[in-house]
Image 1 (cartoon, rainbow, N blue to C red):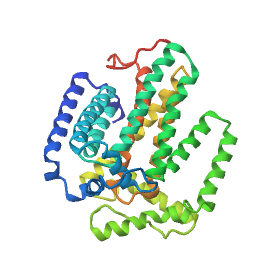
Image 2: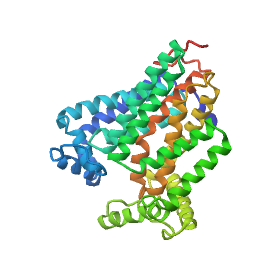
Image 3: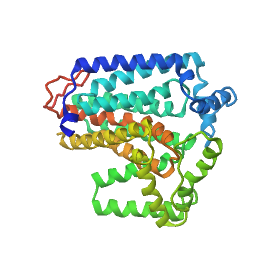
Image 4: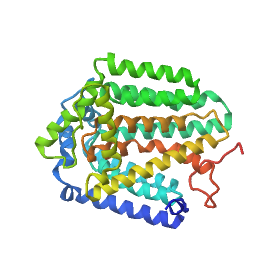
Length: 368
């Protein structure tokens, strides 16, 4: 099986799949409201109803802030922007999908994000800010290759930190946990291991036992509170509750492991096409993260830290999701909204590969 996943994907096959994915997007663009159930449009309806009612960003009101974000343009103009943006995302991922495993992941991923581009959603904003960060990274990488200035490599990291703090303040406060996990992984990589482990332990203990907003019981009970609403509205058939009551660190650990199994291996809990799809998506993402980490370590230029930072941030999001996600749909929706963070690592994977296929749109190395 692994040998099959490592087979190089023919460029002609990639173009065919890209064409099919674009056709799929165009079909869904016109008929998605006839095919998808009404629950897929609950968030969009809330956002549309709020457009024009909010005149500024308000802390801790994600729907009002999303409405304000989209109110900068008319809905018709946003639809055009979204369509072009989705086309570019598909093309970029197809160009980077040089093996069977990556081509499979690309296909799954583009099917997932199509839903975001067909309507106004908070996930579109996440994709938008990650795209801006990646554009800045590749521009800075070009300057680094030419100027050899180390400080240039910190610009994209500074930029993504700023927009994350803005997003944490006005949209989703739990992104702070993902950001702290990413920071902890970076410390383990680039600083003394004993110092990093001690600092991480102190931060975790503070948030779990002394922070009012992020105490261990409050975090553990979020899934059950969300599912009370979901079960009452019959909107999520794959919703599940914690195995044990939210009380104490032992129950927290058991509930976390239980949620991990339900979300990472849903095929063992739900007998549906969605569960098979999600299990394969999880496994492919894990394999790609492993490849990216290995390729970043193999890269000769050790000063470029942004690709590894992106992988750490992706891991931080993934680990944080398990704390809250109430059902498979929400998990897949949130997970696929930040998979763009794989792109820098995938780029370095191609730089270090021995593929005969000369990758399209890859930047030329000057420091061979």
